[in-house]
Structure formats: structure tokens, C-alpha cells
Image (cartoon, rainbow over all chains, first blue to last red; front, side):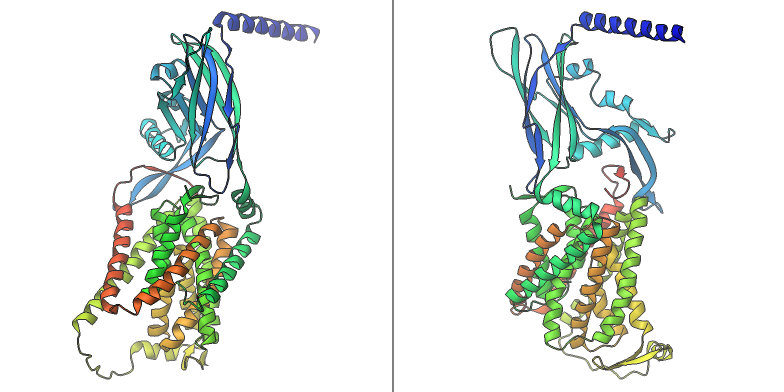
Length: 254
Length: 306
């Protein structure tokens, strides 16, 4: 028993020393940055939103900013022809480990390749079941769907640098969040790349919260569905009666 | 600017676009004296509202639109309550069944397909029928005498059915099975298509239930009001697809549009306008049909009606 504990302590010590030596050898430092605003409000007039990321990277490095949401399994239907004529949803395919948001802002493809990021890297992280399906074709369609919704994108030339003296250069980047953004927490990452190597890394949390009328409507509709249905009809009846009085008995479209 | 976030649809819409759509449909409704529900849902789908949300929210809008209409006809004494309640019982049963059909198909991922194909069939049928009828009316300058015919097979069948009762207001004797069955049919369509069913119910009342025209519209509105109340509550409870903010904007637009439509209709020739409406209905139908026939741009869709 004592021997077992001793072995575990030894392994932990070796691991910790190895971690320290790799970190210092790779020379990856903390990349400071801030997000403005840190909380995105999905309110009544929300139609997508812009968030500014500002920070500093070593003078010779380039910045890459990326935002990802939580990962989940997502089921899709493949389109197929019914009776050889009409297109309809057919077989189910499940994509595993799918981030609900995947936005990258960079200067060049080379920078994101050195981070093992981008759509090709994402393809390796996502598995598809049943495995008999053609991965390449399905992933291409998956990307079309996600990019159309504005949930996935790689934006090049998005980083702007400012002239400043000293060993670090300030940068800023405008991140456009899509109208289909789901409330929740998102990770905002910053990496500084120098000659294909990562020299600094940073991470912050961006929150998206439903507020006001959308929050009220969504919470009523999903948590008190019957009450919401009754309220929706009562409001419509009252609105109809008011319209009837205002326009003195319109016949009403049906 | 002027965008409104719809949490049920999961996207934002331009308020003026939705208001204008309600206005245009209301305008057509006012000009032609027909309901606009069958045009509203396809238009909502075209601006990117998911079909299941479009159909359910349109039902909610119809609750408001038919409330004022029913009240106006009730004041004029044009509502056959006995017939209306029987149609309503069928409508509630049909509506409940329709919502369950949508739920099952939504889980399977094919609710949107059913809504679209039902629209293609119904719009095609109504559009072609209206087009031919108004074309014939334009050609016939003088009314032709109709030769008296003997009792049809349909009339004989109606008399053979059990549980015959007399409907005083409509002055017809019918089996209670007729309004129950027809009400169920319209209720199913109301749930699937998000329509009140007036464009089906009115011909059903005139041709199949043999009701006089002055009672038909009021009774149809009465039945539609309660069918859509049921469908709205059921859709909200079962499928979470009712967006009442969307419904209210549509209602406001359609009510205003209907007032202008009623004014315009007094100044224009009916049959020519009917052809225009039939053409519009057919254009919407062709647009939806092409969506089913042409190869989709994206070969994947979210399962469960996203």
C-alpha cells in the first residue's frame, strides 16, 4: 500500500517537473487582452452583435483570435429524393463533438495552421456516425449549413495593429457575432504566432444572455408552455377585439 | 435597424417586412373577401421563419383576426351556432390530431416537408380552381339558364346517414356526422398548414353542407376562431413553436391592410382581380414546388425542426 502511494507521488513529481521544463522550453507566455463588451445582450432588437478584442502581442508576432462555444453531439437529416422526384429529409447522421460557435480571425491561413485550427483541423476533431457515411461530403455540407447561419467562419485580414514603441505591439479586432447566437458562455482565445510557433496564449470568457422580452417569451414558452399558449390566444383575442372596435367590425382574414 | 429578435424562431426579423407582409395579405383578404392564412405561412417561410414556427404563429394571428370578424357577424345574426359547435368539435379533434402528426414528423425530421407538400397541393388546387372559374366568368357575359336536375347521388347519401337533425338558422336537415367529419378534416389542415381553413370551409359549407351564403361566413369564422385557439395552445404546449410577438405584428398589419382592401374592392372589377389573386396563389405554389423539386443547396438539415 505504502509502496503504491510512493510510486504515485514519484509519477506526479516527474510529471510536474516535465511540464515546467516543456513550458519554459517552448517559451509560451501569457497574452493579455480584453473583450468589449464582455457580455452580449440578446435583447428585443438583437440582430447580431459586434465585440471588440484588444490586446498586445510580441513585436514580431501576429495575433490570431478565435471564439468557440460548447461542444455537443448534433443530429442531422440527409436530403434525399422520395419517389425519385421530391427532395425530403431521409437518413439520420450524428456529428459528434460539434462546437456551437467557431469563429476565427486571423491574418493568414499559415497562422491558423500552426495552431492546428481551421476547418481542416475541425474535421479531424468531429466524428460522424454511422461511420459508413462519406465523411468528406457530409463535412462539406455541414460547413455550408454552419457558415450560412453565420456560426462558423474564418475571417482573414481581420486583425489591425497599432504603432507603438516597446517590445509589444497593440492590436484590435472586431468580432461579428451572428443573429443566431445561442445564449451561453463562449471561450475567446488569443494566440501570438512568430515564425510558425506559438509564443503567447490567452483565454477569456464571453457571455451571451437573453434579456427583456426575448428572455420572458422564451422562458414562458419553454418552462410554462400551456400558460404561454393560453396567454398567446388571450392576447390575440384582446388585440382582435380592439381592432374590431377601432375599425368597427372588420371581417378579419382567416 | 428595426430588427426584432424572435426567441421562438431563433432569429431576428425586420419588423417592417413582417408588418408589410401582414398588410399585403390583409389587403388581399379585404379585396377578395377570402382569408389570407393560406398565403401568410408560405410568405413567412420565404423570409426565413422555420415552417413549423410560421404555421403555429399564423394560427395565433388568425385567433385575433377571426375574433373581430366573428363579433361583427354575431351582431348581424349570421352565425349558426348549432352547426358551428358541431364543426368545432370536429375541428378541435382534427386540430389535436394534426398537432400530434406534426410532433411525430418533427421528431423524424419531416414536418417541414409535410407542411410544404400540403401547401403545394392545396395552393395548386385552389389557384387552378379560382383561375378557371374567374376565366369562365369573364367569358360568360350573359347568365345562362341552368336546367333543373334530379336529386343527386350525394343528396341521397346525405339523407341515408344516421342522426339527422334540423339546423334552423341554415334551414337544412343533415346528419350530425357531416359537420363532425368535415370539421375534423379542416382541423387537421389548420394544424399542419397554420391556416384557419376558411378557403376550404366556405366551399365545404356551401357545396357539401348546403348552407345559405349569408350564414356561411359568420359560422366559418366562429368555427375557425375556436379551432385556432385549440391549435395555438396545442402547438405551444407540444411543439413550442408559437411566437406571439410575430403573430401580433402580422395581426396589426393584416387588420390595417384589410381596411384598405375593403375600400379598394368597391372600386375594382371582381373577376379580373380574382384572376390576379389566382395567379399570385399559383406563383407561391410554384415557388414552393420548385423548393421540393430542385436540388437543395445544402444536403443536410437539423433533425427535430430547427
